[in-house]
Image 1 (cartoon, one colour):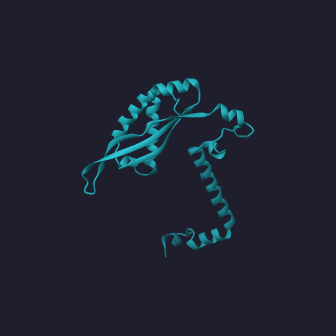
Image 2 (tube, rainbow, N blue to C red):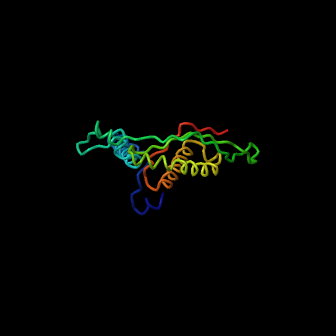
Image 3 (cartoon, rainbow, N blue to C red):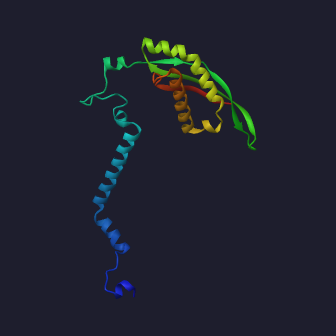
Amino acid sequence: MTDAAVEGEEVGETPETRWRFLRDHKRVVIAAGALAFVAMLCGGLVAFGGVSALTGGKAADSAGHGASGAEASAGADALLDFDDIVVNITGMTATGAPAARYLKIHLALVYPESQDAEAVMSAKKPFMRDTFTGFLRQMTEEDLRGSIGLVKLKSELLKRARAVVGNDTPKEVLISDLVVQ
């Protein structure tokens, strides 16, 4: 006999009684699991996209309607297209020795459409291109691997574009072509 049985104390639940409880309260367990799933989904939407992920990327007013006609045209965006940028980057051979690789990238910057923004962006274009080239030369093949590499590249290019312009006029970097050779 065990010490607990000798002293007259109750012995804890057996695994059979735990499974019997789950079997008898199946609906409660399923409802709790569904509630936990919905809570995690809502938390993920708030963390990664907020309410705009639920409304399809449109700003919602107090009645819950998305932006329409005149509001959408007021927030129109323009593109500043860059010609192909070709730089050498560092790669590795199968034996682990450093090898020269080339990166060719074609990108565009998204910014709000206005006369002032267009003038600033076109005036700063050569300086942004120079900054992009300097940054891209420091890249390695490993930095560009996978979707996370592309996300990091876009965020770093956007950060540098904003630094050159001196404000948050550049909204997004679009990469239309990326080749490593």
